[in-house]
Image 1 (tube, one colour):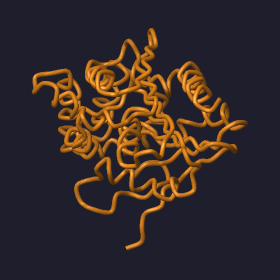
Image 2 (cartoon, rainbow, N blue to C red):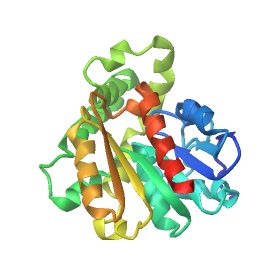
Image 3 (cartoon, rainbow, N blue to C red):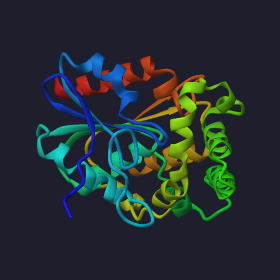
Image 4 (cartoon, one colour):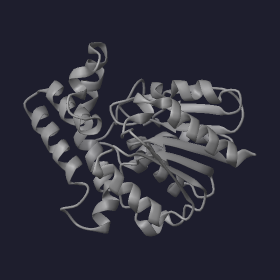
Length: 267
């Protein structure tokens, strides 16, 4: 069987920056970031499995984070050496996994609230900070069992963006997002069974920009706390009044911070 090829949006020339999107999103969330950096970097935004224009996962059970990294193979094959990684939420978890699987390949990683919930469970068994996302996933899966994609999307989006966020979302954006949430069980499995440990993360000796919103759920902030103690060179940045979806809802300050981080590494 031929290897899957992801859909990519590309802009600019220079050192390669690979951008990975959040759940229920696609590479288009990085358009503004690409426009900002295109005069200095080759920015490649990738659709993950089952997102945007990339193929669906071909096997049973959904992809692991390692499988998502394997999908990036053609992108990494033509990327500069070294390259950089940027990720948000699930995409940030994939970015860290890519750095672990390709030692020495990346000169820097910028992540906004990676959802590596297994790290929280490794630190302390439930009940813990990951209880909130577990409850949201269970509620979404119950809706899907009733063939209620809209209800599942409401459970998932409202957890990350606050109560009522789904109702306030523009109607034209809802169908594609509701359809994507059918993958919620697979996303949760990948993030809660990821075998990477704090000891593994200590091998990531490149600078890692760890970004978070002060209004984000405890589930993702708990992951950030683990990362900040495990990574050798973390650079912490908290955004006042912003939450987990800030790279989508308030991209300017987030994009500016990533831009400054990358510039500091290529000077």
